[in-house]
Length: 617
Image (cartoon, rainbow, N blue to C red; front, top):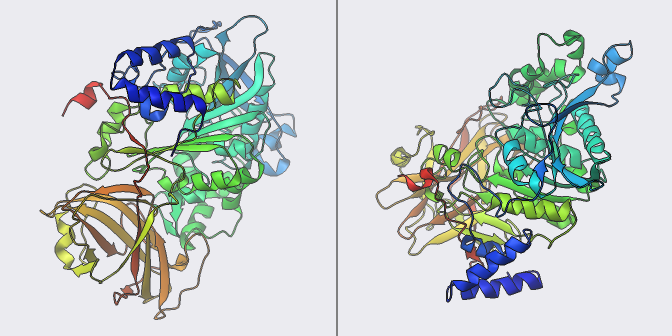
């Protein structure tokens, strides 16, 4: 792939000369000193003077503006934003009809001290965590230690305001904790409009956040609000059901996600009218929706889940840009929130990029957390190359273009890291130019082995079971790279009206030491894939079209791929229609993987991490 602008072509030439004469590095750095938002190709960033010894990333040059002081110790301004909800939502919508509290959203913001008349855009984080009884962020008016402190320190001095917003029923925002439902969506949209229409705002809003706070940007984008120019969802949800069900298989937390996991966030003993504020239909019945979905494998009956699916409305209404950040080993928000979503966005004409590394449920620039949460087969082989100390500079350039509307346009590269630490650039992911390799189960390339083979696995979190089928490839004679969304199509015969299959893929050395590289799960009532419920007749063969979660893998020379099939695994619940399943291994069942085409691909190294966690063994 070639650089997509004249300036980047010039830089690529300069970078080539750096290896001949170090004086060219000084030329690049001096240019950045003069114009901080100058785009440097990703493959040249390792030559720049990033601070790579800190707990998180920093911009290359500090901005010129100071934080505007206010009358509190955090220099924030706190406001309550009124908005409207229909009476059918209950809670504050109902109390408002009788002279009580009306719906309000709690919001705090920070501004840079800029010349009179200068307007600035807003970067905002929306979520349920502000106001927890935690030392990290006891109030929405204090910068969140996980993201707010870094944004205020790095981006605000370059002419950006920053805001933190509590979603409905959390912190000081009233109404019910609506778990990404209509009331929460309306509150988010109202807060975006408020931020964009203040006299100090230039009318452009960008949203950023991780996990729940990475899901609220998708909710805001559904509205097609003209003020929302860009979103940066980090491990964010395109839908709530999509978080907790995959091909009909239920995560252990799924039936209890609302009232048990998040319902308590909206409860404060001293909040006025607390009982009435929680009298919302979805809040009261959410446990029933979770139970219903478990029984039917996530099938939609009530409309609860459709209300909480965002992507289709984003594709229809949103006209801004998207920068997705996702970990391949995220245990909390699986990578199918990013892949193949990124290709869907591009096909719709949305300007989008993705940054996908081998981290867990983390930011891309946190060396300590990434190390703590990386086990063999779960990211450790890619550490410390996974740490991206150029990320905050990347965000600065992204927001400068899309919110301040100046500077070179960001390069919409898809930056992908494989499980052995290599970074490369792709135009799409899964890539169009991959070579499809089909391996029939039980054939020469994927032969049946003994059931005891899985017992040699060395990574934590998985236990071998007696009832499984194990296949292995031959040892590879050279390094083998594959990625994207491998497929496993099986001819199976359930003994009952359902059943499930879990597929585990491993990289095994000649000494039979194995590490996880990927997995797939399916409730056989969804054997066609996706969310379409199918009736299963006991004793009748069906074709189970399984798809693995996104992965990017390098199998070293002399290693082999091991595929193990069992009924359940990871943190998934057995289906409500659990039954024995017979798998046909006569050759019709096939594993389909996609070999990475490395021709003309740009491989690169990020700035070298010098944090103590990266340097220690």
